[in-house]
Each structure stands twice: as C-alpha cells, then as structure tokens.
Length: 231
Image (cartoon, rainbow, N blue to C red):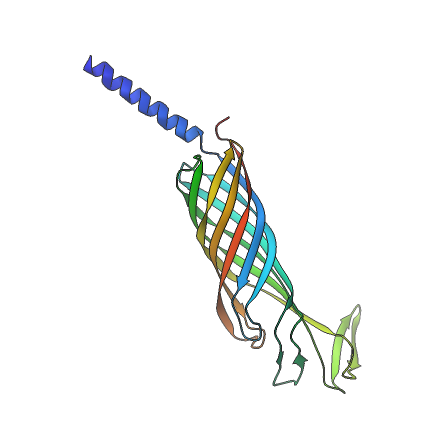
C-alpha cells in the first residue's frame, strides 16, 4: 500500500513538472521601442537617442535562455561643438547627427518563465557600429579634398556655405540588466520595462587616437511572440 502511494506521488510530481515545462515557450521573438541615454564624451554632451529593436530568444529550460539582441537608436540634433586645435577647423554645435546600431548576444536567466509575471536578468556581449556627421565651418582660403569617381577634386573654402563631415566606427559593447514580461496569452507577452546598463568603447571624436569607455542607459518596451509552449 505504502509503495503504491509513493509511486502515485512520483507520478503526480512528474506530471506537474511536465506541465510546468510545457508552459515554457521554446522560442521568443521580441519587437519594441528602445531609448538610449548616452553619457557625455569628448566633444559631445549627454544626449537621448530613440529607436527600435528586436530579440530572438531560445529557451533551454524554465530558467535559462540564449538571446540575440539587435537595436538601433538615432538623434539628428545633438548639441555640441568644438574646434580642432591642429587644423583650425570649426565644428559648430547643434546639429551633430548620431546613429548607433548594437548587436549583442548572451545568456538570460528568467524567474517563473511561463507564469503571469516573469522577471529576467541578462548579460550580452557584442559590438556597436556608430555613424556620426557634423556641420563643418572651414576658415576662408582653406583647401579641402572631396573624393569623386575616378579620383578627387580639391576646393578652396570661402568660409560660407553648408558642409558636413562624416565618420563611422565599430567598437566593443556589452550590457547588464533585465526586465519584466507579463503574459497576455500562450503566444504573446507584454514587456512594460527593460532596463540595461549599456557599456561601449569607442574612439573620441576630438581625439581619434584615444579610445575611451562610455557608460550609458537603455530602456525598452514592446511585445514578445512566443512559440512552442502550452497550446
């Protein structure tokens, strides 16, 4: 009799574990809004960039998953400005255009995955590609060269007229943070908040040979579509 009771208890526990595991989605795809608060760097003050991104998550079990995270953020009117002491070229502030794309990968640890409320924590490693363009005011009489098909042309500045200089680079990036998912149904969850410390390492705009670390904040919100869980 006791043996039957023990066996019956084992069956119930196994069934409960199977049900809990079935409630965990195998795959998640997230689409949402991203806000990046970038701290100040040499020549560029702190600014806020807005954008969007997506994530692909493969859940290995009820608490551990692997994340691929890609998002972009843009600000077309960053206030700043500086003058290159070597060339005398002036870069007036107010219209620095900045676009950053992040692609990062790593583990995510979730609590109560598949339940109504599921907080998570993550650490992702990857890179940032940033494109920056700034308005340039050349001193009168300054020669500058523009590349054209088949060669280049040299012009002499009159000190007037619009001109923009652009540059781009790719550097190491990683983030630490987490968020909260709220289950809507078996195939959709809502994320009211994702909060991450976003670390980057880039060359400085005013000191191209100097690489420094930047410590930024990222907020995200959106919808996840889940597959492979309970039907």
